[in-house]
Image (tube, rainbow, N blue to C red; front, side, top):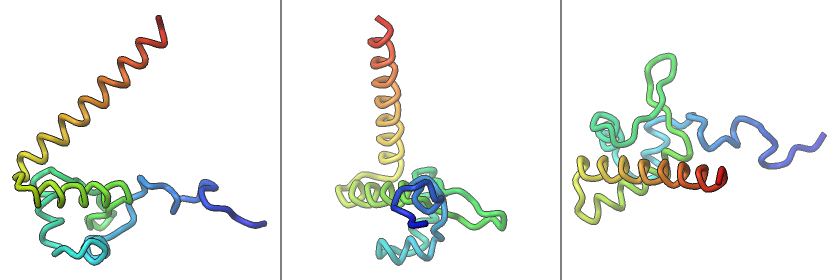
Length: 104
């Protein structure tokens, strides 16, 4: 049986945390210490393996890229964390508005 992309296999899940700190650091050309700092500062919090190692999903890798761009613009990690929190709140409010409009 031929498999096609997106057929439900776990490696097609952009939320599946499978990438190590070293892999992500290599992909993004950053130091592993930078990724650990993002976690310690609660900016990008990866999942943990059973052994306690950080594991990143594709979505988190994109988020790290976004954080890198914001930091390059001069934002502090605290500022970036606050911005990301506010963006999440806006998305939640937009979903709530959409839900309420559907019930009218």
